[in-house]
Amino acid sequence: QLVESGGGLVQPGGSLRLSCAVSGSIFSIIDGAWYRQAPGKQRELVAAVSRGGSIHYADSVKGRFIISRDNAKNTLDLQVNSLMPEDTAVYYCNGDVLNVPSQRIHSYWGQGIQVTVSS
Image (cartoon, rainbow, N blue to C red; front, side, top):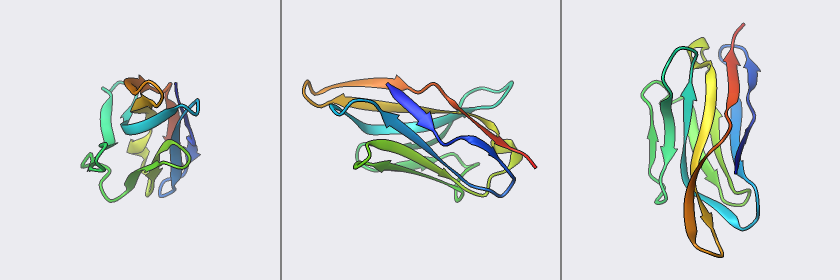
């Protein structure tokens, strides 16, 4: 239901824009978060945005990452700047998706996308 895009290989100090899209015009992402999981480590919360617009960032990414919802495109985006090798991980999108006709809400995960920071 959720599909991430925008990952890849980038040099230290570089930037990427990760995007999480929901398929189907009857669905809408109403809140969500980005997580990441590095090899040998637990999945950790990177950034989250609530339905009311409140935003939370992990201390390790504050000032470098920006989470946002694009209502026009129906995506949940993560702008990642000033990347460091320790940001290397698989990034996952998690979102509450509203089925507009039925007004039902389900939580979904994306399949994950690789971000590698290396020179």
